[in-house]
Length: 128
Image 1 (spheres, helix red, strand yellow):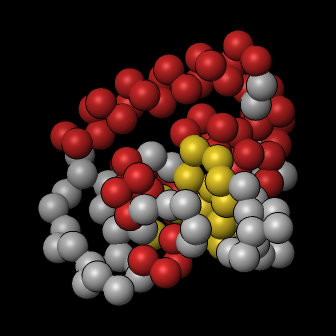
Image 2 (tube, rainbow, N blue to C red):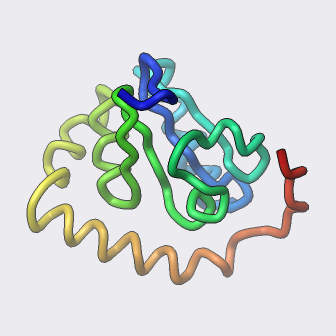
């Protein structure tokens, strides 16, 4: 088991991206959101990122660390996030495997190419 394992999943998101911040705020209002640890990587201490996750990687893509320490990213992280939220579990199950997951990953990669247009400048947090 990873030394950073917790009793609940941890979602790492870029709070400096207005689109990302709005979407995560919506998820945080959902039933079941209290069962997820939410970490805004644009302003957190690097120690909160845990083993195997750099700030650069965390700012580049959505990441979710499972309670057993495994780290998911991109479409796979979204599918797992949705499976943690009762109102969204159907979507996570629908797109969480096979060709649907690959399509979701392709759409997510397209979004990532456009995202710099929306990401606002934010001073870098102090190195820890």
